[in-house]
Image (cartoon, rainbow, N blue to C red; front, top):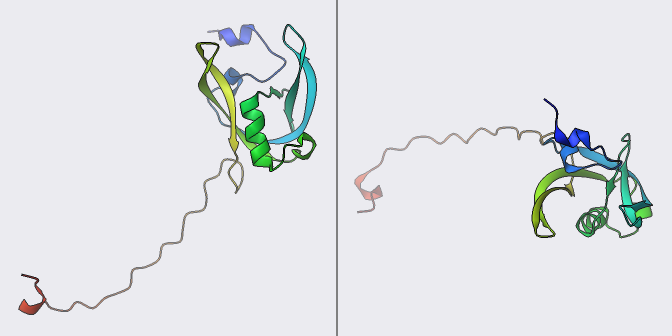
Length: 135
């Protein structure tokens, strides 16, 4: 069965391209390119080892700026981020969009190591007397 999103390929990454995954990617560069019918210049975020970038909107640009610690796009290279899709309101309609959040600090999608169990201290059993009961 064909997916309708495959019938309309895009030069840029779309939420449907994620197919429900939340990939961790490394920023390669930001380029400004003409986008849309009006050919308005927009920032495009490209990733190491990936062909498609995403057109940055104000929300995603702000998130990357916060994660990178700087609004200077030339300093975003090498920053790791996680992409995910969610539903947002856009021009009065609910649509699927890509959003950006922090990547896990310990590697791509890996859970932190489980803590080493610590044995509970051994407490010797002491018999209770009537004086130990609080009533």
